[in-house]
Length: 289
Image (tube, rainbow, N blue to C red; front, side, top):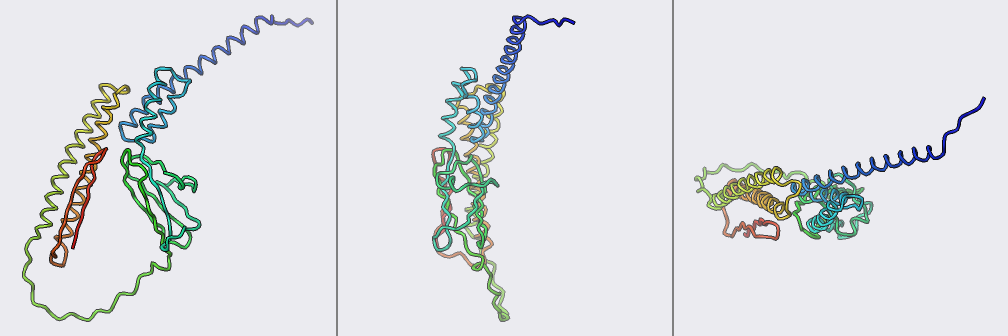
């Protein structure tokens, strides 16, 4: 019985065809992945998720992506890197000494000792930093970071468990009956803070609605090729809204404190101020007695 053999030239032609087809398939998948990262990165940046946006821009800045996409993504990667906030974490015990066996997590993710030794990069917004060590009470710090906040100091002081025990409540003798006190006047300080709270709450609602409306317009008009200045304007309004909301909460809290305080108002000074910063504003409450 005689076996037939195929022409080597035919086999080589078929093999080259298969390799060419596989190469085109990989190229199409690469272009699709680059386009997806290009679009998602812009959406994450508009939403204020700078860390996620940076990850997507790094993907579409890969040289395997189309040149036009690479150019934009490379520029956006550098811009987002400047906006990402960082914190400097320092943890000691009550005597100012390092805490052995320290475990630090940021939003549930463990932070290594090497990362604690340098500025820690976090996304803009609120985070939960948790500090734990054997023999110490756990501690949570909840910082709220804004874009371009650089090397914000975070100081965590852990206290031994044996120092946290509560003393027994003191024995109190029955108080003699007192004559009913006349109703006290409405505290002016509480009314002032309540007014400030209403004004800043209205400001927060206005800027929040404006930012949401502008963001929706950008998604329908220019996404995924919106200008950086347009995205920054939306982000700025969102920051102003958040700061105004925080200021209103502080003002309402101060108003409640002065209204429900059992002691009469003492001579002193109170001040609630909002000062501008590079990316928004900062609220500050000061009470002096």
